[in-house]
Image 1 (cartoon, rainbow, N blue to C red):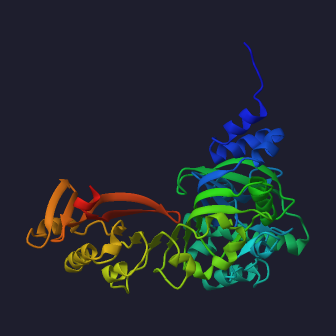
Image 2 (image 1 turned 180 degrees about the vertical axis):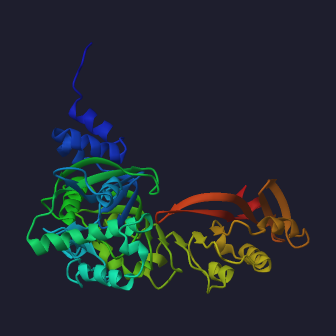
Image 3 (image 1 turned 45 degrees about the vertical axis):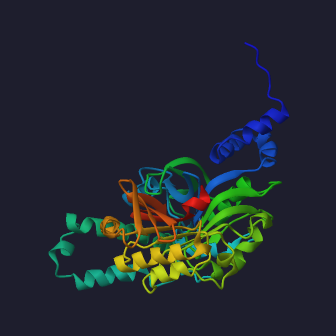
Length: 429
């Protein structure tokens, strides 16, 4: 069989069409291809910065955790359970105390939003031995404590003994009986799926240093901006570890709060070619004073409790508007008035509104209450109709039930009411 090596140009062409996670795997397995891979634009459909030690690329979640393995014998149950679940997500000191504050170290290229990170390192508070003594004192007359460790107490005692280990090691100046490793875990699919370990290394670097090295391997040294369809930030309390100089060309930006409060932190990593960002997706209502929002073509917002929703939608200048709220109370009269005003406004021709509402609202009943005297109705499907005003301007309405969508790590079920302003049929034909 004739085996010919791929030419450089052919290899570049093939790598450019390979899914992002596959490209990462190829670069890991074939170090000689890393330079070529870095020279080709990396395309990612979905990039989620989940937490300090978690990042999701398309359908794969990469996470780092600390696991502990005993040098002799079997590890106690708390250790086994924690290891099975991917390890703990914070650093340990020489005695085994958890030190989450280690993650606060900033390095060049990192994105730190300035939010307060509540960290409580172990080993600095009241000695846990005293907690145990207090428990024994207040339960000294309890047969469960006096007679040893019955079943109903065994879990408590087991967890207490596990927590006491670092105190005992420090008190006796004895190293823990286990070795620590940093483990990389992969979760395929949605975040609720179980993870699987793919590799581990001895714990010689802090978790944030390992995360930095991993993100640098993926995003560092690229000659072109990373093309991202949707960039999602789960929390602003995390520090996003990025290499110096990385740029992202982003179509949609999803943030858990107003984008105006974090845009200045993101600007250094956003490529100018993608500005203004086409789609802004935030949990809070739209703020037109924010240039990121005002200049976007599409906006998505999620909090409408204090809004006159349909009036608010009419005042937005965007060509596509999405509203998420499971608990918004749908008002039929307001909706019909909204449709009338849409058809009266020539500037709204081409606009699309998608309202994701509570599943059990009786929106279908409205379809059949629209009278021909008010609007001409043309049913084009079971949940699809076109209405026409007296001026012949048209609006198409589609109702889709039981749609499941992933948002910030959780799956939500909605009904979608889609409204598109078509304009005048005679003019568009």
